[in-house]
Image (cartoon, rainbow, N blue to C red; front, side):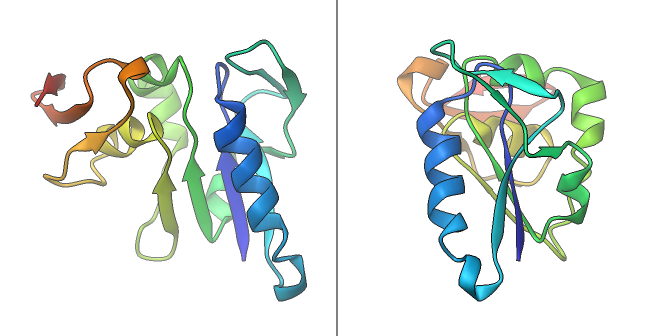
Length: 137
């Protein structure tokens, strides 16, 4: 199983690194997890810069995609050119999100009527996408 851990500028280190490390431990079962990003290097919310392991196009090949969180998730969710790169296929991919990564799921229409939930640092705790605006529950 190929797993893309989507990691964007402003990412939360715990979300991206812990997911990649734990899922990477399943190597013996044929799993691989890779830090995946639209840019060659990404800088975390705390200033740590890392090189991606896979380019953004890897999300299309992956069997599973985890949308990570970060301080700029709202800005990425508002960027049509970025969202166009996230042409995910729930019929063949396992798709998950952590914290503010759920905002991307909502923006992509993958949550239906289920609210996206995140922490207090991302703004209001519960969101739903209605008429192209984030609404507070």
